[in-house]
Amino acid sequence: MDISFLPADKYMVINKTILSEIDRKNLVNLYEPIIGSLAVSLYLTLWRDLERFNIVSIEYTHHHLMTILKSNLDDIKKSRIALEGIGLLRTYYEKGEPNNYVYELYSPLNAKEFFANPIFSVVLYNNIGSYEYELLKKEYQIMKFDLKNFTEITSRFDESYTSSSEFYTFEAIGRNTLPLNMQDQVDFDLLMSSLPKGLINEKAFNKKVKELINQLALIYDIDTLKMVEILRMTLNEKGFIDKEALRIQTRKYYQYNNQGRLPTLIYRTQPTYLKSPSGDSSKRGKIIEVFENTSPYDFLVSKYKGANPTNRDLRILEQLLIDVGLTPSVTNVLIDYVLKKNNNKLNQAFIETIAGQWKRLGVKTAKEAMEVAEKEHKKYTKNIKENDKNMPVWFNKNISKEQLNEEEEEDLKNLLEKYH
Image (cartoon, rainbow, N blue to C red; front, top):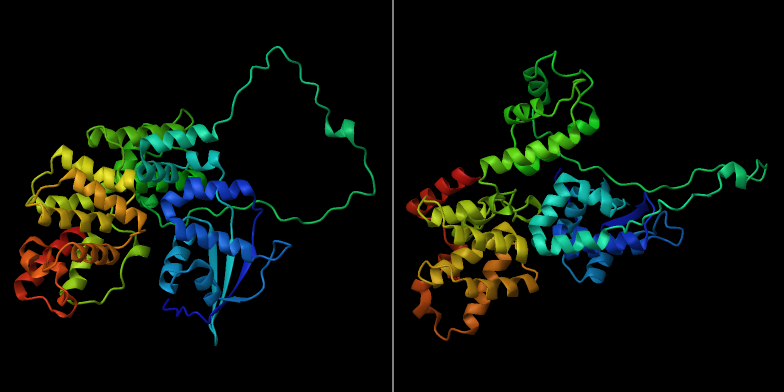
């Protein structure tokens, strides 16, 4: 839907769950590395907008959010979409003058649910790295006590209370979380028809099993026919799917076909909600499109003229995406800039310096990365024309007005078609 989104548009917040300080901690520790600080701030602001009964807020305008968050409306919309995609927010829209929105808040997953989720746990691991990930897991671990020499003497409810007319019933708000809203990653009709009827129980594909299959297919990039092979190894004697075995076998399958590696973000492109609006046909617009629609791995391969990058350079990519937490398109801009400035060499110390600065500045899009690179370069260059030959083509200040020539158009078209 083509929906306008203006500062004067009004909104109300409805609380669909019970929110606690533990949720605040989980948002910062577990969700922020995935969705970013602005999305978390937006969630907390909507939470604060709720009235004292924590059920429904008064009516606000979106200018209120712009003022509180010190952010523009486009970034707020991107953050809202991030909250929707990860299951923390549900949005409703009513056209009018002004338009009206309703935002329903849902709880974050608790730590046990989060680490058990095959998508969230792997993406968090990829975003923060193994060291930080293990620290977080330890923070949420529950200490176990040896009670084998103790006898439980806890009283039952019927021993502590008697029936009384003073007990009333009412409908109370409960803790609610949203399931991930995603399209099927496999063709379940083909999946079920490809398994021998005598091998699998007709009731094996229940809702939870389908959700798990979709999640595993997404995170491990498994297609329908590959999933059929894996499912054959996870069926028990009654023809049902062993969910834990399915997790293990999917992971093993991926590692076997990827030299023992687990899924990594170097093969992922820029998230949709962080991409620029389509339609910019200028040279700069097309370059941004390449940065956004090419994975860092494929972008580096293109710099290698189609050859496989070295293990050292792949580790640099993983460091930028996992340890530093840069987005795919920002990583592409950084690689392009460093290669051009350092005679096609990836100088790790130089990369780490720039990456750290961009991370602190909150750079998340290709456009922002290009602007910061140009700005910083101008600080240290008195005569930028003398350095044009050692700079990426997008450093040209007039490029946004230029149209592609035939050769450039063909090169970019081929790259987009290959990696779109």
